[in-house]
Image 1 (cartoon, one colour):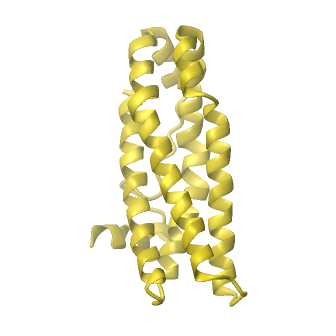
Image 2: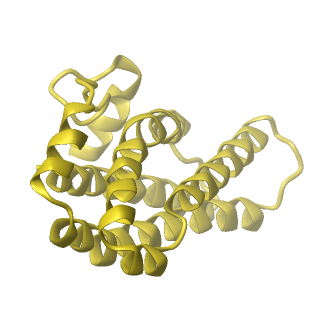
Image 3: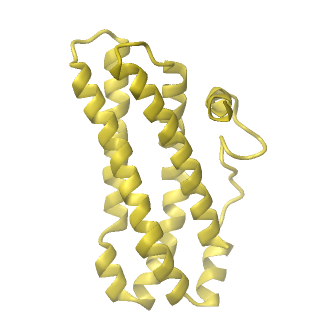
Length: 177
């Protein structure tokens, strides 16, 4: 089922947020985080959610608009939420690049940027799990799900599938520890 795919992807995203949080804790203590891991997590967020996860959610949301506009109004502009998340991610990537380039940047500023990204991602996923997904399950009809499923791509998750892309192998090892 499509909602189960989205929920599994949320669980995978949470694993990455935990990895990022652990590396941020290392940074906050004044130590050097594993920047290879941090880069791989950022790279994953730049690739998979925007290219596959969010478009799938957007298709479900479009169907929900037709079936239950009252709940859609309660959810708000999902696509705008996704765009804001992508902008927060760009800020995270810039902050990390600035640290690695030894540009003058307060440690607290970097911490705040990354923590904000983590917190907002969690808040967004919690809303989807609590409001959006149950509403879609209740309102969408078999034909809606069939149409959404017909547009699914065979794209496997570059980190959490059987075939892990090489650039994400370091993160996968880190998660498994």
